Image 1 (spheres, protein in one colour):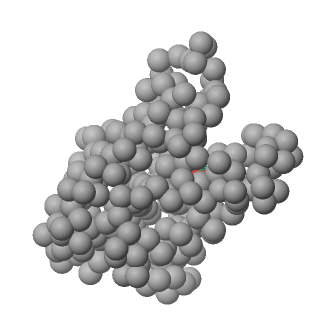
Image 2 (cartoon, helix red, strand yellow):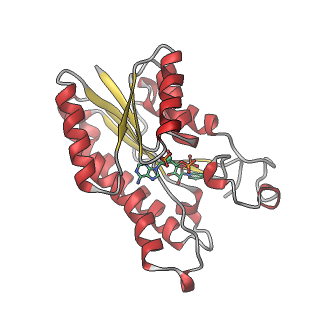
Length: 241
Ligand code: NAP
């Protein structure tokens, strides 16, 4: 059976992507790192949509945890594989570069960029041997244009887009597509502390996006209809560039 695995599936955009994929009929593996209650709630919501759902708690930035979680999942699912991988887990540690601490730099890169690498490398083999797969990477407008106070985050997301384009060319022949989504400002816990009234004036549509709008794009990229789209970074930003 083809499973979908969504990292950071317990909240925000990841939660909405889990629900979208559940609605499309995928059994969903919900990854998260800390928030058990939120993850349980997403599992229940997926099940209410009639889909199978399971939790897989691990820190994407820790290669040992990635390895043991995937190994355990594969042992428990000898006849299944992760056909849709959504690398969505991400964090912000904003600071002006002149004040930025080593840990603020490293934790952001470790989660977004290294997390993508550890997990995708581990799951690619099955997609390649089964000759069908979707890798969807949650990048950001910040990775396309750079945002002040986010040198760490912009670097991680820009690198993720570069890796998306390189990997897409490696695996295209096996019918595995690799794309990035670059959201602008989306309502979620991550953007809760931002000055929304000020920021939304910068957005031509005059509002923040909804997690469900990003999830709809992820759902399309995961579908058979998107088979010829690969190596792209698709913006979803209300016209803000
Ligand atoms: P969010 O509401 O803060 O949720 C973050 C999710 O990531 C949570 O499920 C969290 O799990 C999980 N997570 C964090 N670190 C993790 C780790 N080391 N291992 C596994 N899971 C981890 O964030 P969001 O706004 O939905 O953002 C989702 C993605 O979209 C991120 O990559 C973000 O950079 C990107 N994005 C967001 C926006 C925006 O405006 N919101 C814009 C552009 C791009 P717990 O619940 O266990 O903490």
